[in-house]
Length: 402
Image (cartoon, rainbow, N blue to C red; front, side, top):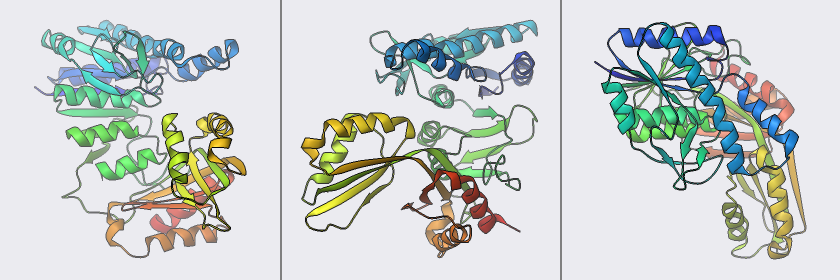
């Protein structure tokens, strides 16, 4: 008997017919002699709808109250799926994040998991039940509900798989696996049979929406057997695993992230400690920084540019405005009409000319590069948002074209 954790996203549980399809997948897994824990997201656009409802009442509600509101979406999904499975004659129970002992910190709207007690989960499984868990949610030390941020249901599933030492964690989505690019943009994108944790982590962090980056990070840390599969076709998916025995491709995928903004702080003092002041201020306000570029100093002045999530642009503008005297800068410019396009590949570290080929593709498409960031297995560029789709297609053709 194997223990399988299965996660179904919002598209997979969006309506009655799709819930019935998920119930069939889950019960088929159970009929094969497996113990099954299922993690569900909110149905379809439920989360976005709830955010809109909140905005109609309060443009800036507290994060705590938003967490109380948003966790209801997953609770609807879990109870409906449990009812569908009951109808098929299988013993089943639905549980919230706090009922399974999902303890988190108190960073509302983007909480981090501290531990999962697992006792309730184990007891229900031992009693022969299929367990349906509301993803995306937990509870802090004060007893308040918290949410794990967008994509947090992936993280919930992997955390449960790690806590229970599950044999496999399957992430069901609306695509058949991990592709070399978003198949909705690049029609000839290829499905990968396997990808390394590191490659998947980079792709997830860089905008590929198949898996949440925190879930991949956790899967790598606890060596969780991870697989991305479609809830619609039942075809084999993509396995995410350690890459020591895998052939390393120079480039495994192309990703884009349109949730970007570029911040430029102009004419700061070119003195030791200036960068520390800027980025310690960002850290104090929990602002995630990505690409950083510092200009060459001139006349004892320099400028620092960095990228943030577009969601944080308004907040960062306010933080910098309040800190103008402390930072002693001339001006701040924030551009939200930018996007990040990246290539990822474990073989990149030992291959020459990869960056040249990427830049050649962008030049051929008439796309200007604003910022560049590299690591051992990825290259990212910041470009105008309007060019992002064209850039993905051009780069994919360069590396994967026939």
